[in-house]
Amino acid sequence: MLDAAGRLFLERGYAAVTIPEIAAAAGVAVPTIYWAFGSKRAIVTEIRDAWLASAQTGTRLREVLETDEPGARLDAYAAFMGHQWATGADALTIQQDAMRADPDVAEEIAAVLAERAERLKGVVSPLVPHLRTDLTLETALDILLAVSMLELYRELRSRGWTDDAYRAWLARTLREQLLRVPGSA
Image: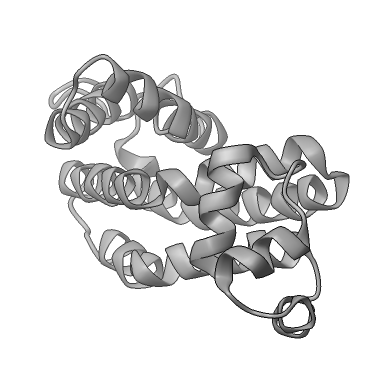
């Protein structure tokens, strides 16, 4: 059912797809969709949750957070984000489209993104003693979030970059933008 809904959302857009169309594409009765999910919004949530589970987001983020050396931590984060975007592009396309069409989805996703930013602060917090002197924890987090945006990943991929090239660029950019040059005050 999720696969059928996802295909329809990607092909026609969240707003244009109805629950009966999802049921027909999945080969189930309409009440089955309502019983399993309750709403289109809940289907989008399930698609996102299925992606996060299959991408092993929690495990991969823990690996980043367990990396102590500052440069290696940023390298691990770049690999983490590259994997997230490479595996989640369809789920995120659906989510972004649903946000534009449904204020309830937009509100839910705003909360998810705020929680994400708070979790990712854990990537930057241990780096504070190693940050460039003109950065605070908050500005370092802002930079981390900005340069690892999905839209930037998509733009670079559309211009022919490989996932490996993206990850290498992101790691290098984060090191350059966040960390003090060795030997500088």
